[in-house]
Image (cartoon, rainbow, N blue to C red):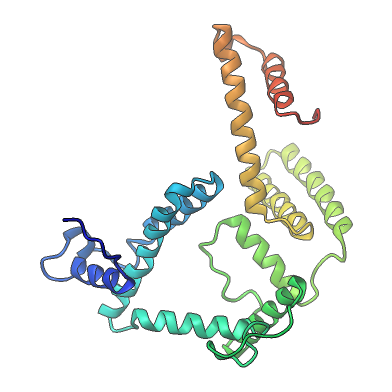
Length: 275
């Protein structure tokens, strides 16, 4: 007979303990904080991929896989007597109460909610102010402290720039960023003319960094903007492949100009303006 009761978080914690305990799973037993990091990253990206594809039927499953990663880390920490899963929840709720005074004015979870609604812009400013206060309570040597090195480069660049802007180190408007982009292009051209690989890489990095700054000034997430461009390129290139296949020829049989015509057809098929 099938189990008609729903499993709970306590059941998941028990299952994790069984996997790691005597008679458990050999693979789970040999894992460490370090060895499961790649699996955590994979699960995060699978959740993102499911969301972007709006694959709602599989989202629940992918979120469960991501939750399991958190439970796994918590079990490792408990075994090493670092902390317990309940402490993760307690610390998280405490932090969220502190960062949402516009919802929990007394700072207590079960008290009455605030009577007035706050504007999103005000909430964002308040959130950053509270986070700065939290960072200030810890020993800090630079505003750049505690920005994880393991973040994707685009995201980390945006966070670095945001921190610098918080102390006034920023262009006053987007025109300054556009001028900087033109400056970086000129420097990249010089590096290309020099033929120096190290200089080319350095200037290319500066150009990318300036593009991230442009996204920040336009209130765009650079990672999301690039992922959107990736999807668009892949979609259009697949159309080019279809055109080549329909002709009975190979890519090598076409000049770039001819392939670009297929590309333009793909764009027109999407109803977009000419490049």
